[in-house]
Amino acid sequence: MPTARALDPIASRQRRLHALYGWMLLAPALILLTLFAFLPTATTLIASVHSRGTARRPSMFNGAENYADLLADPTFWTVLGNNLVYAGITIPVSIALALLMALWADRHLPLRGFVRGAYFTPTILPMIAAANLWLFFYTPGLGVIDSVTGLFGLPPVNWLGQPQTALGAVIAVTVWKEAGFFMIFYLAALQTIPPDLKEAALVEGAGRLTYLRRVLLPLLMPTTAFIFINALINSVKLIDHLFILTKGGPNNTTKLVLYWIWEMAFSYFDRAHAAALTVLVLAVLGAVAVLQFAVLDKRIHYR
Amino acid sequence: MTSVKATRPIPFGDILEAAGAWLLALVWIAPLLFAAWASLHAPGQALDFSLDAPFTLENYRAAWAAAPWPTYALNTLLLVSFTLAGQLVLCTLAGYAFARFSFPGREALFVLVLLQLFILPEVLIVENYAMAARLGLIDSIAGMGLPYVASAFGIFLLRQAFKSVPLELEEAARVEGCSFMGVLWRVYVPAARPVYLAYALVSVATHWNNFLWPLIVTNAPATRPLTVGLSLFGAPESGVNISIISAATLMVVAPLMMAFLIFQRQFIQAFLRAGIR
Image (cartoon, rainbow over all chains, first blue to last red; front, top):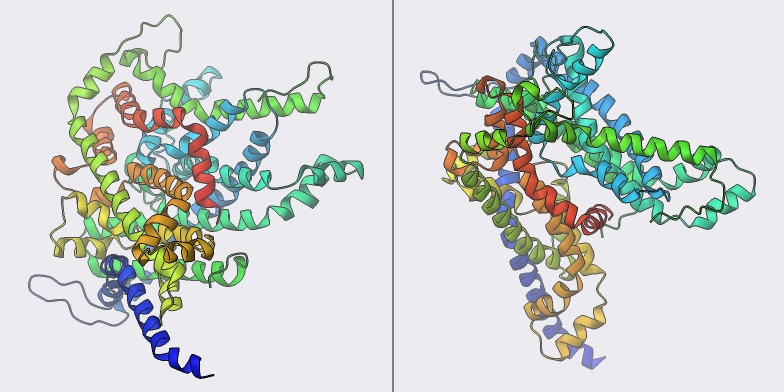
């Protein structure tokens, strides 16, 4: 094939040009990702194996000492436990509520627009504003909750101030904030399910609950997986309300990992231990990413 | 919307479910309703839910006078515009590169970008702060926005959108003499318009509400956005009473809330589109 060989240099020049354009198009994004993702990840790793520098003693390599300090610190285990409870409750509860909301918002209800809007509204509020609104509920003696329970003769409760209820109060705000957001994804998925499926199931004599369990839930599995990953990430990320509601107290009972990182770095200026803790969080998030890519996400074509 | 037919008897179960749906909806907006009530009444009567309690706008006046809200609002506006503009440009270019150019290392790079969906800027606050300080970006709009500009989510969304554009369209444009940037501008960007709209709405809502990173990067009131201003204002130690906090909170959420009420359908569609890959 003489023509093909004659074209070859042109084709290879074209390929090189193509590669050059590709890199040029990516360059701005790559520079920013390097500055605010790759380099900080690297410096976090480095800082995590160096001692905390002081004016007299400069920071030096100390191996796994920062990590050992963390593991020896009872606060670490408290905070870890808090975050596990936080994740363990907010994830299933907000997913279940989101599904319920979507099933209701998908039905032909009177005032459906209002119902959908009400469920979704918390999503567009800043977490700080949400915390302020809930503060109004929780204020001991004066808050809405105590005013209502007071009608039944119950004593006032310091919801945010006592260790037994504080984390629960914080969790309620998170669930309130994210359930409506997750509802949207279920709503979208429900609208792709053909209505004949339901009719067929009902003709076969299946009750609504059977239809939900045997037909809807399996079909919604990919959506549930997607929401689960998002909820998992949120259980690390959503901590803004702590700044208003509890500041991690009382007695560290509402301190979550990211809040503790912030506190270590910006209140105690302990960059070394904050870095070690950050590395642990990055490891967990990396594991979540692997889970997502390898196990849950066979629908997306990354290539 | 209301397609309940009056002629057919409505099953009791349906009525029960409708009642449940409404009750949950009421519970869900109750915090906002209570705040609205409190903000319109004198502090002593905030929790006196009798209808004849006199209305007052005094709380709004007090809240407005107590903090530099116009400055905060301007900063939020600048932050949101800066971030969105940067995201649109960078994610378009990067999405185009990943969708239509082949070069060595592309797959590995794409995995690195996708990893950013999980390695959130929030987690890297400590070292990102060090970086922002090194670049002299503390107390600036750019400092608050830049870590979010190379958005992995935006790159991913636009790559998917560009990949779904038929190649014949690009070839036709090339035959007409379009350069590779011309093709991007004339073919790909217009084809992805709905995705841009969806992404823009999500981005604005996200950054309007962002708190932790702006809190860390700003020290001066002159650069603070609304969320940071509100958090300082509402802090219990500031001694401001609940009616005034409610008024301030509602003032801060009002613009986005109003936009949401007006564009509710588009908003929800946008979130749908942006979330479903």
